[in-house]
Amino acid sequence: MLRRARVPVTTLLFVLSLAFAHWLDVRTRVRTGLGFEPLPGRFVFDGESPTLVQSLGYAWIHVDSAHLTSNVVTLALFGTLAEQRAPHGRFAMFLLLSCVAVSRGFHLVDARDLYGASGVAASVVAFTAIYTLSQRDRSAVTRALVLALSLAYVAFTELKPLADGLANPGWIPHCVGYAFGTTVGLCAVMARYFRMRFRAQKSILSASEITTPAP
Image (tube, rainbow, N blue to C red; front, side):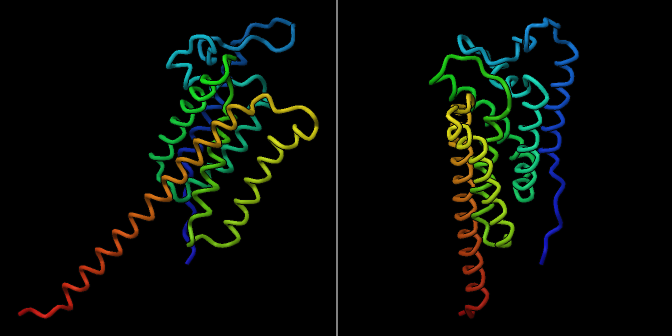
């Protein structure tokens, strides 16, 4: 029996907020005529002394429309797939925690500034792959599609630049995102497994109480 597709409310609100933030940012930037215009420093993750606001706000800051579009498309696609089963509230919490995990994980190994949602996108890709592939009630076609899309994302984002002789400058936040998304995905799979076992044992106990004759 096919399930009705759920509206990915959290994903939709997240990508719309990214697009709105970029539109607002571009409208207020100072024109310099010297390449990229300056990004709003109060939200860019400061590699020297980052603030809590910057640990979240950096994900909403993008250099240009191409930078924004690549992240929005990835988040919209994989977020929609994940949110077909993941509760909206928990997925929203996962996105926010991904922002913090990527920025703080990046800060442990690199002192550069950080901006853009590509690390969060990598986290969502990893989570969606783990979470979807573990669901036996999903069709083989759906699971194969998610696996193919995940591998294609990694190949295009990480491996292609390496093959061209130039590593993706965002590979560190991407790796942090992959690690965080994989960890959360595995935790979700284990939690569902134990929850299903508990329910099965509870059903067996209930059935045995019903069938056992009274003395």
